[in-house]
Amino acid sequence: MDLPVRLVTRVPPQPVVLVDGSGSAAGLELSHWPGNRTPSALRHDLSTGCALAFARLEPAERERLALGATAIVNNHYDTDGTCALFAVRHPRRALERGAALLGAARAGDFFQWPDDRSLCIDALVAGLADPQRSPLPSVREAADDLQRHQAATDHLLEHLPALLDGELGPYRELWEEPLQAARCDRDDLARCSRDDLAHLDWSVWTAAAGARSTRPGAPQGFDPGRHALFGSSGTDRVLVIGPSAAGATYRLVFITLAWFDLQTRAALPRPDLAALCARLGELEGAEPGAQLAWRHQPADSPSPELWFGLAGAELFAEHAPLLRPSRLEPARVRREIAQALLAAPDA
Image (cartoon, rainbow, N blue to C red; front, side, top):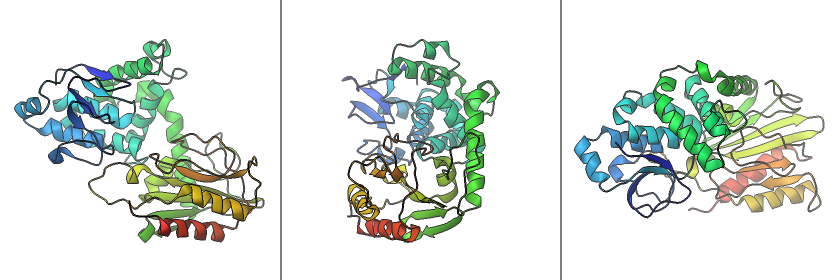
């Protein structure tokens, strides 16, 4: 589709093809975000899947659906959004690489691990827009995030076919370390015990006492990353327990599956994380405002976490360096979390 591709901070008033994201755009939406207006025949679990469904249409039908559109836009920068932009802008080349596009998008938005190439593409998409790591002068010299993201997007729209075909060598510095770390994390998880509670869509990984993550540069303790966790489990929420002589670390992560508008699975409601956090804090006996405490991110964010340790965890963080040992026994923490999951109100 011969339209300019633009990243925007707010959706323009004129008609556009809005790919991924949201914003009540005038024109066509191709997104899996909550509240999207994607035509029912084009809906998919991923925005890239919506865009590929659009690409499969006859050219005349694509033109009809996008009638009057002045640009193809997205209001944020990430892997699924970039792959979706490419599929709308270059439908023929995208359809030739549909499975690879969906794999990369899945690694990005769902923190899954379809294959190493998908994981590497997700890592390099992030790295290309990082002013400290990007090999692109246009990114390093950009004045703000929007310019950086536009420069990285422009580069990817040109070079994504080669990346999807496996030509990743020129970007090795962006993906080699994340891939190595994820492989170590996956190997570490293979040595854990695992309980799957299907009725709660919940996996619990428990390391051996004193186990430590083996990825290069990992801090003390047990802290496997999101891609290893959700690439191995397939559930919507995961608890990682790291027992040690000083106590046990806990990291409860809710993946994005319950946040996006999915077509292939029904999402279970999320619990009241604030109430669960308060309950665990009461059992912990930590003073209000203590440096070490039970903490949580907003339950209505796409992929929130709950943990014991220091404050300041970033949204969507791969690892959790702020974890610290809790005095609570794993059986008690599991029971409290299970009760909160069971008590979660229907959406």
